Length: 308
Image (tube, rainbow, N blue to C red; front, side):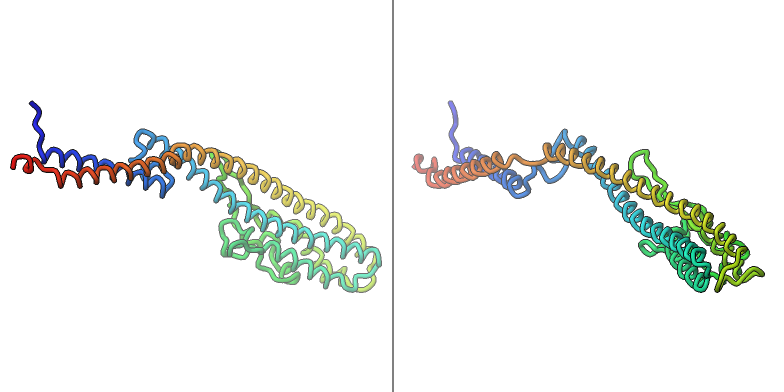
């Protein structure tokens, strides 16, 4: 004989209502967040896989951020090297014009201007720090301000304040690129030439003004060759900078492709099926309404009515 009790009917109806409400809340959450769950607990056994995928994404994003910083630095470095190269080329043109005209009337004045151009390139800043200073980013790498101070220095090496540590960046797993140059590596050759010219002009065979004699022309012709070598060294460093920029760009493209692939894998595991989520929400709402109607009917139907 099966017993029928009012309490049992109410309990069953309430359980059905609570279950429908839970399903409705879960479906509503999927619809609003467009995700299957809002935390790793909700993904069950897939949580470990998702954690690994997210970790890989974070590492790649870190490399991307580093690559962006390196690219910005290389862009500034290219501008600095171009400025130095232009200064060297202008110095060569100035000496060449003096030799062609047999006149050094404005030679030293123009070389002073080119010295300032080269010095500005060597002392160029990037994000507040000196670009060619090594790790001493707050110390100006070239501290002489004119050709007179350059000539008065004990040696060319003494005018450079940079250390010996070049900038290096880890842009990928197992890939660290040395992207920086030092002021003394870039500017020593050209500064030696300019210093020698200044000392020659103030020495017994000077000054280098007015009409040039044969001895002065032979000296300046030799400096042209030295400046060409110095300028080629700066150009080579500019080419290296461009090559590094291309390498970083290719690495960045690879990282972005990997991140997109990982994002797709994560999305396949976390994104909700919106059509199913909306359907589940509608069905759960219908179930809630049905359960509520049953409870309402139970309020009007009691076994006490039959016992009376």
